[in-house]
Length: 297
Image (cartoon, rainbow, N blue to C red; front, side):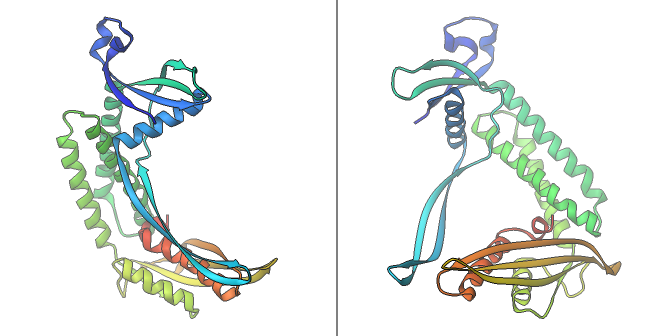
């Protein structure tokens, strides 16, 4: 177990100086080496600042004593933000027990200043881009970068709030406005879907149409085509499903401006059809959990 403590300046070392005006976080980490302890300390700091419990479900087929059975598993996973802890400094180490106990510190004042600067830069980039955004593929493709900037600034604001930073109300308001503006732009881009005559392409067209705002005549057309391969490896049946996405613009419908492939491999002890279905479910899950802009990035 690791702990996070708040101290002011170098006072944690018993020193009295002007540096005490700066605030520090001290973090305990455990490991056989400083590197392992630093990783542990960063993980615990991330969890202390923000954590979220997610429930994951998985169904799989296994062969036990010649019988094929389906197994269902549900597990809880605690996730934290991908927090980059800058300039982690080692303060002390105690290796009297089997696992060394390290104490680290990070300058909270400088970290807050850096996070505020990151938020401002992300907001400036988004604000500069939105007035110039159009409905061609090169414009739509930038939505992936815009969404990434929005996620990064949102995460930085969460950390700032957890660190007790002041003067973040205005950046939070701007974040909310930018999220609304990006959503309006995204909803204003019309996307249509076309599928080849294979069954999986038709299935994916239905899934994409359901998960996003689709139009019969879009600014962007996504053409879907499936390709499958089946075989056997040892006692296991193996299948690979590929989904090809080709992108066309309304201004030039005969030219492919971009192409993306999504592939997955499934295995089954019973048949190639079972293996193929498992591979398809992986692609379906990816499509259902990502926006079309992320998929086409």
